[in-house]
Amino acid sequence: MLFLLMVLPVGNHLFAADPSLPSPDSMKDVAQRSIERDIPIVVFISRDACPYCRTLRNSILAPMIAADKFDRRAMVVEVSLDRIDAMTGFDGGRTTARAFGEAYQAQITPTLLFLDSEGLEISKRRVGIPNLEFYTHYLNESINEALLVVQGRSDKRQQAR
Image (cartoon, rainbow, N blue to C red; front, side, top):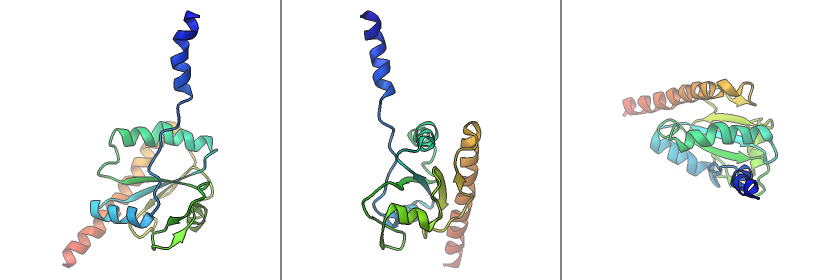
């Protein structure tokens, strides 16, 4: 009995819900915040039953968000292809998560897209998890590349004024 009481708290922790990432209703609103902060958007394309998506969310993305690793570098949002309610796209029109994924040819999950405020890809997308040990390195590489593009455009706009 004592053994069960000692194991029970650990067992409950094993069944804890996955940490959640922001799941936007409006990519247009996300784009506006990205312009205000002068940072790119990382869109995590996922599926609910995808074990690799859970691994990426739980082992990489959620801990990095909790540690403010994206704070001044990128906005991270999740779009589950299984989502059934409508969302607003970058153009302000109504769309579905599935149509959003199809527009980016992102049916394989997990996929990370690195986008500017207009929804254009500005860095190499990451598809799957080829190597979990080095994934954070490759993620940071893509974010740095996207950040340079966004800030370079911002600098050009400021110089044109």
